[in-house]
Length: 549
Image (tube, rainbow, N blue to C red; front, side, top):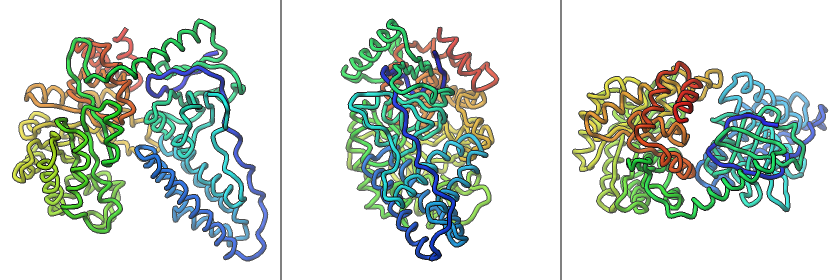
């Protein structure tokens, strides 16, 4: 039997399946002993303990997993939820029942919103289970244990489970729920685990059944033939052998160089990026220095952190994004004023121009790091709308002594004015996440419009082509630093549209490198042309795939 879903990466796995254990039984709907304050105090202890545990796990694993686990940690202390729990306890509910009902009610809201937000409901459910388990003094349900390797099947996986999987035992993941933006997909990609999400019928597979999980095809095959198992094992061996071959620079089959870079969030991500074959950094997010501070960090503090990261990449490109605050990342000292629609408000370069000293300090610190290391530092501004803003940022950076200064293409207007922008900037880097959001007028955090958040949409691809064409005409680089670059098939199309570098989560580098080396520039352009002619995201995927055969 064949089951279809959304594959994550290009991996393949063969083995027996084990299913996640059932969740804890629902708490009885009964009243507490009468002391609501004491009941709530006990719940507060469990809320704090679970929040602390999730945050500690995040700190221990780092990378994408840390961000996901920190988000889960915050759920355990969310004021809206804790107030609801308190109200329910004061109405007579036990602590366990109050937690269960409050979290379940919010889960229903998220599920009703659909898409991205519905995928967050699984995370919320896991936090609820952990709190109830703590209140009961028992272990929270988690990944099953086994003496032999297995493929894990679950309705969906919570961040804490995915982030801490034993990779010696878990060969692959199959989930009934989730999609390409679910935390299961994001973390599976970051850990290089073959995974397929959104598989209808997955939970009907009996424990112990042998399956083949082919992420590249998005296909789960139960009770596979001997020939299919032999082929799958051969592919697994080939991938394993490829991982031991010295990593070579990213290139197409005809020798066209496509440098493959890493997206990193802090200096501690540097060593792993190097180990996984990054040829530099295509996006260094500097927000980690600012988000937990009540005041802006000093020039000296910033320079030390920038120097630390740059030191891992002597002679290689490191692209640093200036502080991108606003929208979902407000800062008290920069843009704390309430906005009805912060995604369209004072964020990115707009906020920095209003508080220019913060920008000057950051660029000064970057100049110091540039002079203190042998890395090839490039600096870019986020949320740039047109040529005037590009000219402002480039002029400021050059005046302070930065060698290479460019801008991010996240706003459609920048693509429309690409020729003027590239006349001013040294380079452009495309942030496909925001470019898709703004092109499709679909808030990337809003589940009800999540289906629009697909970088395969021809409207987004046409904007990428406008930027790619302008880069070719100006003789300047146009990179990709959004999540789209981590999709091997889409990476080929992006190169065909004119992208000169690709930057992604480090774990995706191997798959993208392997995909690129199988096509020529002419073939990449043919796939891109086919995708551009489609009318939907799904149509673009199918057209590109057909052009590749």
